[in-house]
Image (cartoon, rainbow, N blue to C red; front, side):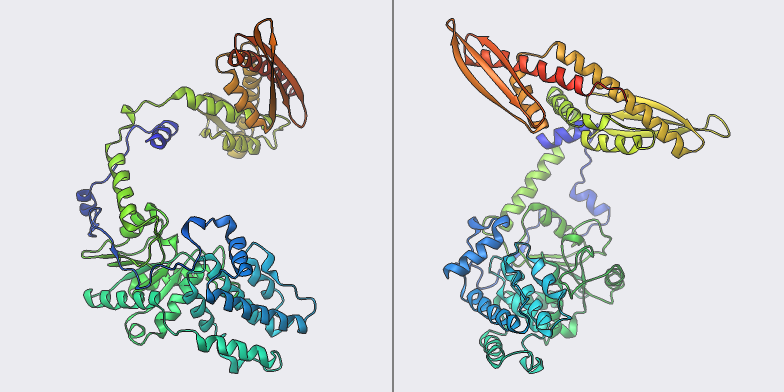
Length: 542
């Protein structure tokens, strides 16, 4: 509710539109609706006590966590064996190329494959090791849970076919170790078998099957497409296509481009492909035809995915299936969060919820104070760019209006509007661009004049009651600190505050009945000095 209040106030919203289930159905949504619970179809072996515990999964420590477990020998048996193979491959590559250095110390997991890909022209060993690094990345990102996906990935790339590997490139011991590794690994897994069973069941229950499978990683879209193509039954009934954002590739050798993404969407729209395997890029914002089966292969992290994913199952008698869930965020909790959000949104009336405008104004003043350096040293040529940067930092709205006042001139009015300020300026030029540039120059001058006036007014009367809070905000905006000290002074308390930044050092003192009063007075005195100093430093004319 607090976030809604703030949004409504900042965006001047008077009404929040909220569709009921009945309205959704009138609009063409035929799915099960908000009241329908997701089908939770977990694999037989869903709990893994040997992997990284949920409470210890901190994304920024992912790299360190994995390799610490490897060093201590507490990683899963699969992870330990997998790393031993990689060490053998690295040692063999080191013999071929003495300049090789293992990239595994780099905490950027995608850099491992990139390192080998850039050097693949030097030796075939680099290209082979690149695939093992990418499989290792799958393992690390999943906190050692998804060893099945890492194996399927290697089989998809044909890394298990030792007969195709160049004998001259690899020693006999390396070939033997790789072969023994793949022979010892299972050819199926509970997680993949569970997905196959659900797909077969849904194919039988829907006369014209149209499904979407959501995954977290781009590379897993390729893995599932390959796995389904290898399945005896599903390969005959499903024609899967894949989709994810093209900004970054799945791996250095697996990528989609804009054309292939458009072809996938077109194939799914036309019915040529009856299964779309995608990341959360397709949860919202992309025009995808209604599906009658939506499956989440990986565990969902929040209620947004729960709502958006189910919303893709818009056909009548649709299925919404979850194949994996987090222990701390089960489907029942996500459904409860969705209901809570629905109840809040449907009953929230902006006009009935009074926003603390004083608090918003304080925040706006802090943003504008922090953006003040942009109001210096601007010219007619760069004023528009500086103005846009200023608006971005202060979260203000900048609007332009063009009027033709003569046949050969353009007239532009620029308006700056924030929680605390509304200013306008005009510019006349030969064309819209020139007129807007001149208007931005005049508006920057007006903003700078207001800043000077505000600085002098504030300096004259800093509010003692809020001085400590204001000083803290000032220090936060200038990224500086202050130190405080107290002493006795005629049965009263005296406080001395010392402010220090990279460019200035000032002190302020105050005497009061107790420490709290003394600090308030000292903070007010220090703020006056700081604002005076700032006004003097920035008082030069443009």
